[in-house]
Image (cartoon, rainbow, N blue to C red):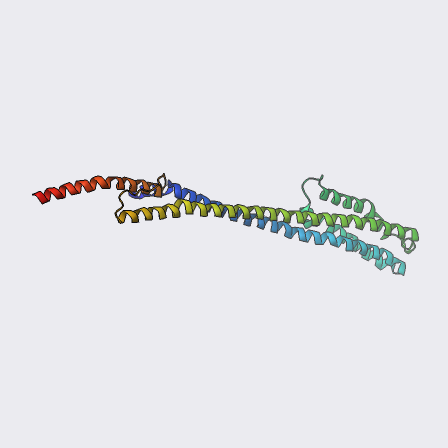
Length: 267
């Protein structure tokens, strides 16, 4: 029974509740900051891989253009084989998991729209032209008009890829900014909670305790009129109330002791 009662006193303590709430708030801010940092770190790690893959699409585009132009050197068969392999590699990179995972779920966002433009230009224009060149004769591959058309189309296509990569970088920077803002808010809140905790400890524990020590010291020196102003519902407040009650009973106790002492002397 005594153990259960002492536990209820601890958990019902206003001072323990205030300090416990402040410590819990500090711990919550710390956990929140670490959780947000971890999630954003994982997200940006995948974004970095996606940006690298998207950037490689530019190199692959010019590589395909170089294979197309290499047919003019005479070894059209070898150039067509390399071009076909480069087309397949571009297909795989365009639908690579890191790139598609970074795309938002909604197709109405700028990043998803840019990816759709690239995919449409590749599948509807660039890829068919390059693929047809892998089946054409050496004379067709060295056509001046076709060469200029492919280079012009590839230049515009690479510009679209550049725009897409830039948007991916901006999306990653936005995630990092969110992490910085959340961590900044968590830091400010943590500092405020720490300051509040220090304030509560000073005003609810240290200051009343010093006051009680001061009044008990004065009472020990013979000042029986001393009283403490710290009375309340917390532990030190109840201790101060008990001290005032005890100090208030001192005069009557002393009078009673004096009367008893006088009677013993008379007898």
